[in-house]
Image (spheres, rainbow, N blue to C red):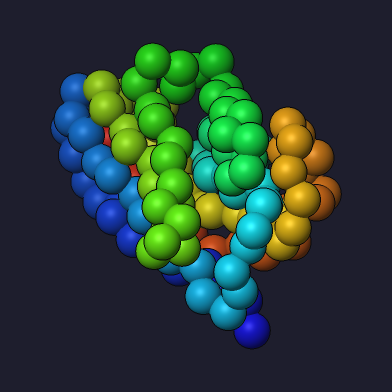
Length: 125
């Protein structure tokens, strides 16, 4: 059974940093689309960043470019999101997700079939 488990969320002041981790178990992907999504209070879910594990095609939503970095450790089957210069508007539940197989630009939200339970990130001003 595939499981994605996030960790690393918490509360920080504006300008601070957090590093989220997403540990995958139950499968080993040779090539896959992995992503971080977030849903803030009263907002729709949005994709924050994604990575094609084989081609290293990386996407960031405009609002986090230059501040967030998505990365992977294939040996540990773990996905990371380094978040720097955090802003109050980054407050959200962050979830990792995976296609399960495939790659490319990883742009289809419907193809993310594996999801973690989410971790809360709260940024205070």
